[in-house]
Length: 168
Image 1 (spheres, rainbow, N blue to C red):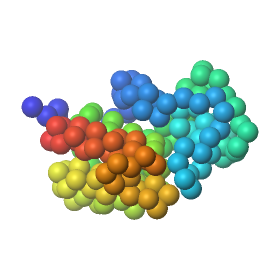
Image 2: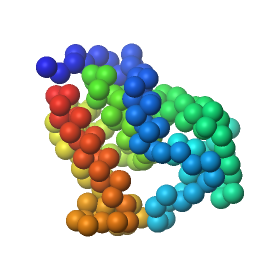
Image 3: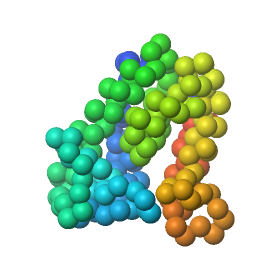
Image 4: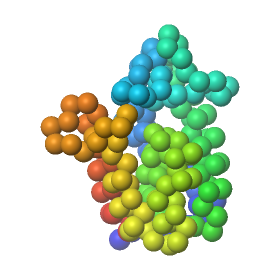
């Protein structure tokens, strides 16, 4: 049975989702470009420092600083995410998986997404299915069979989609 939905304004990312997010992102102590045409990423997938400045090639971090950076980033994104869904109710599982998506793609992409439009229209299943539209990285279709360029992008979307469906 799906968990009850409550207004998004009352939700926050669960601790287990935060841990899952940083595990999915992986850790790097030096800034890298994870996929072609991506931005420099540091720590647990952070593209920005706590002060809002962009991560640059050559930047370094420690595991503790990286966790603080990730939490700061998520807190800022959550404020924008909650404001983007006035009157919408989600279960904790739905909230967590959409916030995981937002951490990867950003609130700019979220605000234009079909997931958001579908949630605002009360179309929860359609919003889940919209997750599968986000399968590209650097213009490459990561769902291509045998893909060695960005397989994690597609795997993560399939996992999110399955979690979303099970929350319905």
